[in-house]
Length: 224
Ligand code: AMP
Image (cartoon, rainbow, N blue to C red; front, top):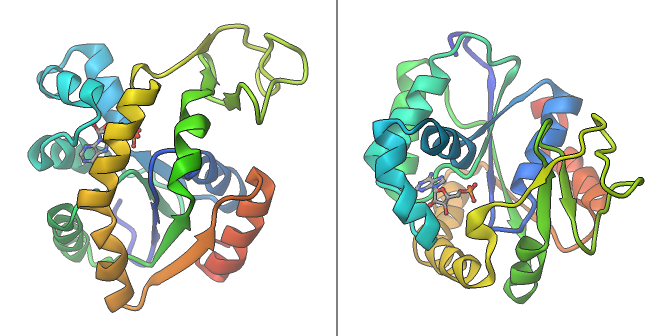
């Protein structure tokens, strides 16, 4: 990411808040590139890299992978010149140390965090939201057992794929551990970014479309 003044948007929120879904919509509608440290780590696990091997057990338990590993996979991806009009970070930063490391990384590129949106949800609903979700194995389009089924059962609306997958850490007990990690380590970032004047809050208990509209309103020209 070498161009100055490219947008750096951060989506904050617990598992199930809709960060991934909304980040993908911002990619399609606003020319931003989604950077998900969870996806990067799952890729490393699938490839069996050293980072992936170190991260696997922690991810399966719903804990946070070490800052060192996460920063290494993120830096590698951010060095890519093909980052469009900017990036939307989904799942990063996850604690204050990562936020400070991001500030330093961006400062070195002549950039800064442009906007941070906290997706505000009712925790109790998140276990059901997460435990029912699955994605198309071919294109990654997201679905849900109760909230969003494909129009034709068993066929992806977007690419026609017929294979679907579920994340191994989306089991109810692991989701609870992930929610605990969010509250203990990630939620303090709301105050961190609020103090910098870049934070907005969006009610994320509505439908995917309602959240998309609210997010577009808040981001305005940041991600036009
Ligand atoms: P996610 O796809 O964002 O829900 O992330 C899935 C899992 O990957 C998390 O439960 C963590 O174990 C790990 N992970 C993803 N991003 C981070 C991060 N920024 N810091 C530490 N662990 C992370």
